[in-house]
Length: 496
Ligand code: ADP
Image (cartoon, rainbow, N blue to C red; front, side, top):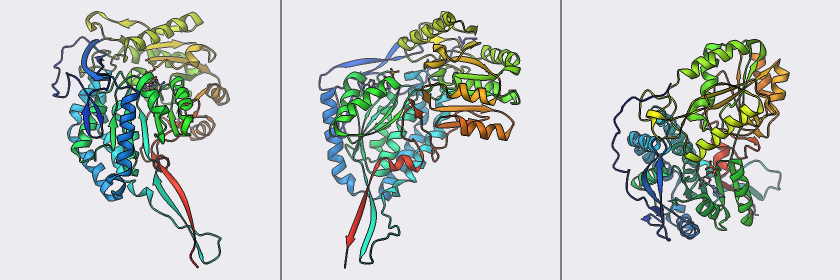
C-alpha cells in the first residue's frame, strides 16, 4: 500500500540557502567556491546547497583540528569535557524535533522514525559523557625491584577523521563525536554528500554549547575529493568510517601512508534465522522490519531470512500479509512506515538486484516495483520478498541496501549455521526460537559481531557492536571504543 495522504511541512529556519564548511570555528565557503545541491529523496527537490569541500579544505580543517588539539582544549579536565557533553546533550534534546525534521527531509526516513531516535541519541551522548575519565593513569602490580615504579598513562590519539554515511547520519556522527569529545581528541567530519545537513546543524549546537574553535570541523563534499583527502592525510591520526566495504578498502589503502588507526563498520548480509518453534506473532513483524526498517538501508539488516522448512509456507504467507500492509511514502506523513531510498542511484541499484534475483530463479513473492503515481518523483520502492532463494545466488551474497528480503529454507540447526556462516560478511545475525539451548548454540556459532535473539536491532551504547570478516573491524560503543581513541603509554621509573 502506498501513501498519498496530505500533510503539513513543518518549518525549520536552518533549511534552504547555502551551507558552509566549519573550519576552526568559522563558517566559510569551500576554497574553490563550488557548491552542490542536496536533494530530498521523497520529492527529488533540492533543499539546500552545500559547500563542495576538497583536499585544500581538508588540509585547512586538519590544521585547525591539530591547532585545537595542541591548544586550550588539551588542558580541559575530564570534568570540563563531561560538562560540555552534558550541555550538548541538553541542546540536542531541546532541538531534536528540528533535527529529526532535517534528517527526514535530507535522507527520507519517516519522521516517526527520526523523532524516535531522540531517546537513543540521548543515551549515546550520556554514555560518552560518562567516559571522560578513561584517560587516567593506572598503577598495576608489577614484578620490578622495589625502587622501580611502573604505571600506564593514556593520551588522546589526536586528530580524528570521521567519514559519515547517509543512512543514519544523526546517529552515526555521535559514534565519532562522543568518543572524540570524551577523550580530548579533535575531529574533522566528512558527512555523506547525500545527507550532510544534520551534521552541520549539530556542529552549530556544539558551538552554542561552548566547544572551543577547531575541536570539531565539518567539511562537506564528495567522497572522491574530500573523503579520500581525509583518509590519506598525513596529519590525521585515526579514521572512523561507516559505509560500503568497497569504500572501506580504499580508506584502508589511503590510510597506510602514516599508519593511521582505522575503524571500519562496513557492509553486511546478515542471517536472520526463524526456527519452527518461534513465536511467529513476534518473529514475522520482527524479521520483516529487520530488513524493511529505514527502507533496508541499514548495514545490520537481516537480509538473508533463513526459515525452517516445516514452517516455510505459513511464515511466507504471514510475511507477505505483513508486507502488503506497510505504507510507503513521504516520511512527513505520520502514517508512513517506509520512506524513499536515498537517491536515484540507489533506486536503480535495488531495482537491478530485483531483476538479478528473478533471472537467477528466485521466486518474486511480492513487491519489486518502483512506486510512482501520486508519490511523484521520489525514489520509492515496494517492500520486496524473494522466496526459494539459494544461498549461492547474488541476491543472497551481495549487499543490496534496499527493502529486499531473500527467504532461504533450512532443515535443522546445523544446516542453518552452515548457511548463516557461508558469507563474506559478519556484521550481525538474528535468531527466533523459544528454545534457550538453540538460542545459545546459534549465538555461539554465528560468526558475526552482534547477535539478536527474539529481537532485531536493539543496541546499548555501553555494550556496543562491531563486525567480523569483510564487515570491518573496531568496536563502536562500550569502553573498548573509548580506548581506541587513546594511546597507551608505559612509564617505568627508577626512583632509588
Ligand atoms: P555509498 O556508495 O552508498 O554512498 P560509501 O561507502 O561510498 O557509500 O559512502 C560512505 C561515506 O564515504 C560518504 O561520506 C562518502 O562520501 C565517503 N566516501 C566515498 N568514497 C570515498 C573515498 N574514496 N575515500 C573516503 N571517503 C569516501
